[in-house]
Amino acid sequence: MSAPPDRRRLGAGVWPAVFVVAVLLALWELWARAAASASILFPAPSVVGAVILRQGRNGELFRTTGATLLRLASGFVLGGVPALLLGLAMGFSPRVRAAVDPLVAAAHAIPKIAVLPILMILLGLGEAPKIAVVAAAAFFPLLISTMAGVRQISPLHFEVAHAYGASAPRVFWRVLVPGSLPQILSGVRLAFNAALLITVALEIVAARNGLGATIWLAWQTMRVEELYASLAVTSLLGVGFNGVLALVGRRLVPWHATPEI
Image 1 (cartoon, one colour):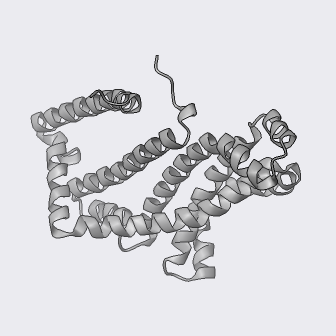
Image 2 (image 1 turned 45 degrees about the horizontal axis):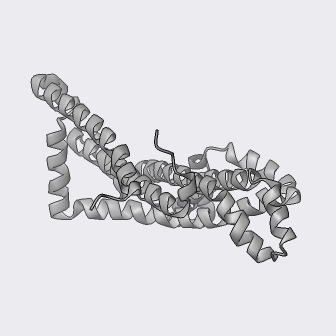
Image 3 (image 1 turned 180 degrees about the vertical axis):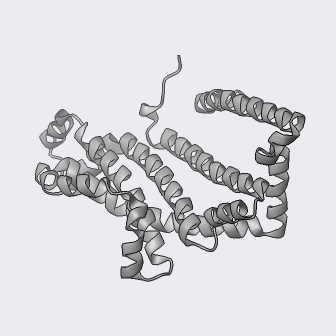
């Protein structure tokens, strides 16, 4: 039995990337082994992989990654849910958009990590200010993408729905949400990547655990291979989330999938 078309398309998109990454890692491995001086600052992928396996066996990998994921997930939900609701409202209502958009433009321009000292004064020195900064990082990309997704829906769709007597909730679930969903998913991807970046940056400057804290400690003690290991795990988190989101997108918005050429 042949694989479904969706799986064939997914495989066709994944394997070229896997091949390119494998070639780059092989070249890096050969270069690190051939040049002893290079391996000091650029340890071979096999060495980095061995560090990750060692950290996995002794539990350190799960502790550091778990701390980062907890901050990331908390901030992502805390910032993402209001962003989704407000983005839908701003996209649908010109009055809401006119009232809120200048505030969004002003706040979006502020570097999110720059407000950490203020939040530490207001919320204390615990996890709350860190999660609030991650929430702010996730908020704006999802808000803007959601608003843009609603605004690009043709007014004709709403007119047809009203002509058939659709109620407001039905218009919301059958027109507004499906029409804006591709842009919303793009916003989720941007929001996650921004939140992950800010989470690791926060851990470097203001945390005792997590991937960012491990990266900083590895730099301070010149354990370069552990630094690269933490960077690799951070990268895998991003790749894993984006891969899952791509699968979800194919299920939720199959009409928006890239056509085969």
